[in-house]
Length: 134
Image (tube, rainbow, N blue to C red; front, side, top):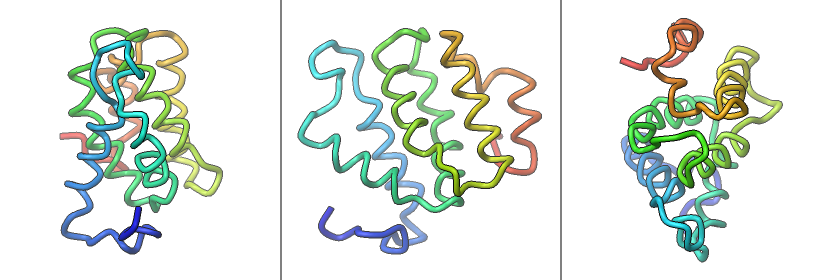
């Protein structure tokens, strides 16, 4: 990523659009070939997710809600790609509450129902005051 080498290189007024685009591309399509993602681009997508600040991770989790509508089952290709993103952003330097939210998503994925997490009342309650999911 030639123009973005740290999270501060992402313009504030373009954060949501850039994160949303990277989510869409990294989640990919529901095809078996290369897990639905351009393999030459995976390193760029993942490097962006690795450099995000806590506030940018919050944006990522908010935007992820919109992409979950395209995940039809917990064992689909897209669900597996979502889990890869979640694993990347699950870092020890995040606040306890944000890590709890991420771990809640991981728990749903471990049970094979990641596509249902954003609809679950317990998750919505956990996110209150941290993520604006409306």
